[in-house]
Image 1: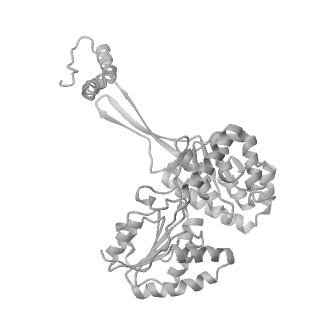
Image 2: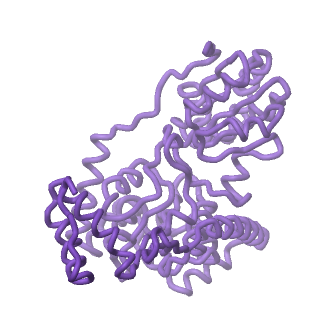
Image 3: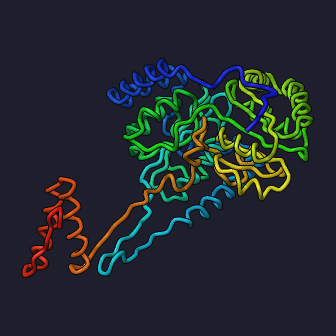
Length: 435
């Protein structure tokens, strides 16, 4: 495969993992030992907030009153789409039973976890959509306890639109606490909350590290890195739309990679010409992020044909993958590594991020090679069960005894022996490893 970099990344997204891990581990340990009081100390230190921690109905009502009616309608629209898609996802997992051999019936059952902790970023941006994505899917899955957690702004509290979104999407409790202390509060069951069985939702490197360290004690959706996005475009693509889409994703953060993969050099050069001006036109904070991301992490890659383009994309395994090229069905059939796929210029990553129904909590940093994003299934345990008649158990017990002895696991073998002896006392069985 021959590819050419018209623009290559100067840096690669990495965090100071050792330093971050040490800080986060210390906070988690102190809060686990010190409980509510220690969590409140960290909230005062990092959130600069001393208001309600678990929001009351009055606080929720007051926040709701501050949300403009048009915004409420938009949130309800997005919630409805996410809910509808999640319900369709849930329908793909069915409880069943099957007779594996005569007399032995085994089955599958999907059981939602009891308590889900949904982290909703609220720092530089108020991630209203994250409240919709995480809380709605937990609700559809059937979780009995859903905690929405979002950092308050100093002296103000959680953004009203986040409170409103979390509430209408089904949060049972809304926790006004950010960062590691918020993650710890949900995990350890502070402030009267049930202990979370799973933690979901995006966050900064400290939130991500807290989830990583706690994984095993609780489930998590995934370990997230900086968001990334790749566009596949051929000569039929509109260079302005391609450029705007790249800039739109670059504004996430200074270390958010964006990639363009194309087989048309004229398109690539036009996009590279357009991007700086589009970045310059952004508001100040967004401009700084987008400029740094484009300068340091963006890549523009020229391929010979669409097969090379598809292979390059799969090698990157992007979180978001957009195709602006002819023959969309071919791309849908041939691409295999991505978090979420956006086919044609009529859709864009921002649609999935905010309102179209698919989830925006997605695998980053190449994790799309082995996992998909947040879905209703993440909150559900797919468990198995079995029962048998005595005749059905007979061949299973014989095979189990012999396999166990061949492995050297005599205790396992005897659990089969004792059943055969009880169920069939008048029969003799060859249960040796060489039987």
